[in-house]
Amino acid sequence: MGRPFLIPEFRMSDLDALLEAAKADFAAAPTPAELENAKARFLGKSGRVTELMKGLAALSIEEKKTRGAEINQTKVAIEAALTARRDALAAAELEKQLKAEALDVTLPGRQRGTGGLHPITRAMERIEAIFGSMGFDVADGPEIETDWFSFSALNNPENHPARSMQDTFYVDMKDENGSWLNLRPHTSPMQIRYAQAHAKRYAGQETMPEIRVIAPGRTYRVDSDATHSPMFHQVEGLWVGENISFKDLKAVYLNFITAFFETDQLQLRFRPSYFPFTEPSAEIDIMFESGPLKGRWLEVSGSGQVHPQVIRNMGLDPERYIGFAFGSGIDRLAMLRYGVNDLRAFFDGDLRFLSQFK
Image 1: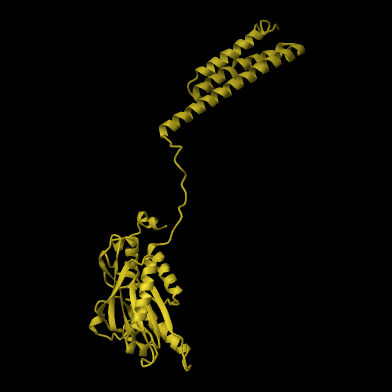
Image 2 (image 1 turned 30 degrees about the vertical axis):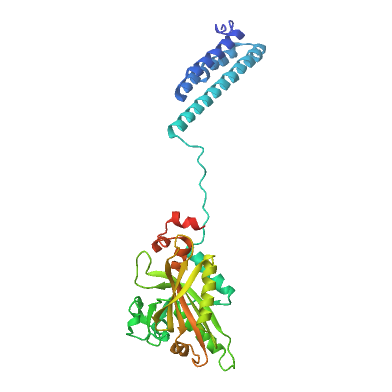
């Protein structure tokens, strides 16, 4: 049986031509699918390279080694050209996809933002630090209180007209003594609790250290407008001893207010008022001597000498002990310090507003 016609006419130039033909076909393939069709024409089961390999069977051993190596070398070169074209088509497809999706590679990655203290918390911590520097303790207590601690112990008995704006949130239950429970309308109950514990601690002793305490915290009343909220924050102060007068109240509050606003360019005045738990009583107003609020008197606190009946309810002798008390709205102080004109901004949860205080 004679050899196939291809083998006697086989020349290296034929392999070179085959390689160039494969490169040309691969380069002309516009899509991966058409590239695979071109691959089949050269490297498939019936491809031209495969046919050359089959033709080696009719050659002698020496010819098989020589021409087999030459064909295999050409096959490797064709496969390399195929891989290069595949990579080129994949890169072109990626480029097209990136342009179509308009990916902005300059956009910074998402990061977890850092938190910060709420402005009311900042104001509260500042108040605690200032009074702490003047020797005042900080007392904390329950927000659900008994009627006795919220009103009666403060010389504000049931049905008293002064209670009408304060006894607004009640819990439908009573304590073991039959007293109704309520959401405290002020932090004054902590003054009574603290003073009672203090008097009990030093009961029977000839002398008792002075009571000097502030009670900051959340309070509740039916109120809601630009300067009032049904939930607000208050700080109450109490100083009781054997010789504490109104001049001490003025000195303490003036020291506090100048430290809180970091300025001594302000004036303080006491305006006569009425509170059941103090006698005499006064509203405290301040006026800034510079800045956007210059020249306006602003109410910031209620105050007065502690009523003798309240001293008795603390477990102390009003003939021996006397003192003063005050109550200030922390939210209002924060509004003045930070220049906020609507109280509701503190509680809306708007991060654009709150992030300013980080």
